[in-house]
Length: 130
Image (cartoon, rainbow, N blue to C red; front, side):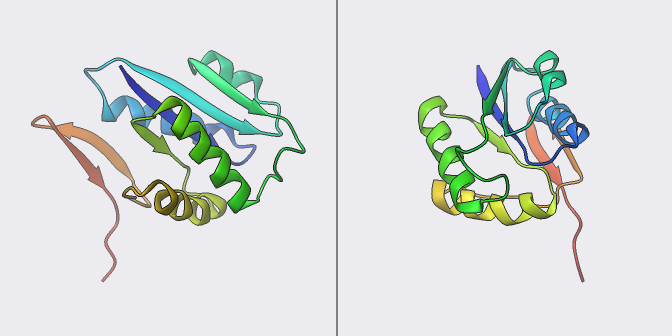
């Protein structure tokens, strides 16, 4: 079973739910276990969508501390061995995702607009500039 972590970095739950739908597009024919991580926020509605919601209380890390949050995400990766980590394309997500990818020695695809499976292969759509 695949494991997917989705990072919630704002109070906009819609971003997180959209990323959960994208995860479903990534693994349409496979069961996956979904995890959401929420830092210092009350997001009870997420519990109905995700298999697991990891709440980190305030004081463990500041809400927009890239270094601290990436350290927490890297430790969660060691513990749970996620197959995929999704981060919303918010200003903070665009700063934190590359830092996390470097720390985990993995690839990164940014500003994705669509994800699907085509002929058994993962297809990721993103805008091209110039």
